[in-house]
Amino acid sequence: MQTRSTNPIGSLVSTLVFIGLIGYFLSKSGLVSGITLMIWTVVIFGVIVVISGLRIIDQYDRAVVLTLGKYTSTRQPGLIWILVGFQRMIKIDMRITTTDIPQQEVITKDNVPVGINAVVYFQVQSAENAILNIKDYTLAVSQYAQAALRDVIGGIELDPLLSEREKIAEEIQKIVSSATQSWGILVTDIKIQDIELPADMKRVMAKQAESERERRAIIIRAEGEFQASEKLAQAASILGSVHGGLSMRTLQTIEKINPDPSKTVIFALPVEVLEGIRAIAQTVKITK
Image (cartoon, rainbow, N blue to C red; front, side, top):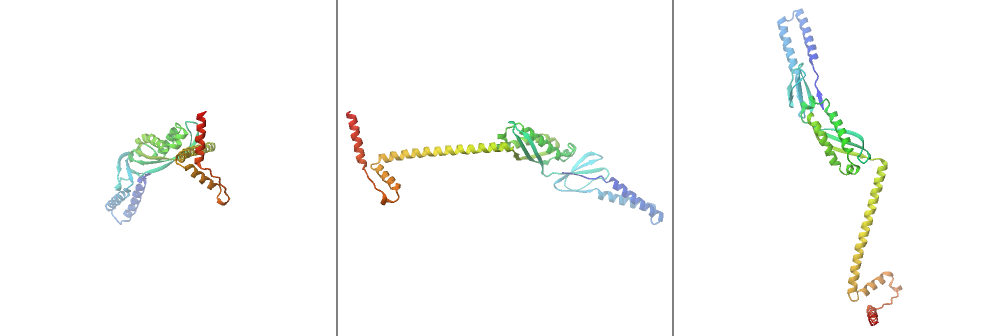
């Protein structure tokens, strides 16, 4: 933000004319002599010039002084004095300033229309360049950032735009900084706020996300069944290798079929009998 000081030369002339009229009437009335009146007029005018030239510069400001329209100096914070009527002062705020980039309708590289807005953070580094090289540096930074945003977004596709906001913002910041450097402006950061998509694109992306979640669920379910089958195969192998293991597992399964043991009739056939029958069958097969 810049604050221009007014040129009070008109006020000084009016004050001088006012003092001259008072002196004229005093001299006509004979209350004071002409020489004394002249001395007092000069003294009063000098005091007015000195007091009117005093200025206070805040800590966060810098003052650009122009003498007869030409740049002469940049004053630091504190109490300063300028020669009223010949010099004027322009204050520059050196703090970080924010400006909004209004929502822009941009078409991405893959022909998707999006609405994007952002915020630019910048700071004046050289007060004299910000005054002498650019008329309104705040408006200029905003307009240049707006154009850079449109150029960068127009050269990328939608997916990188949604997933790489920080990278895109850094690229825009580099483009704007290269232009504002000669203005004495440092662009400290650019943040992309909102990315608005068309309604039909939102529906398509929602369906895509839903399909992706279903795919992951099917894969997870298949992996679970595969792991369960491996464990079952290992359990069956262990039970088959242990003497009487299958019989114990069979009894446990029968017990779980009916929770009421009084209503269950069990015809148990020892595993040894089954193994004997299996051995006889193998012997008969070999004999044949």
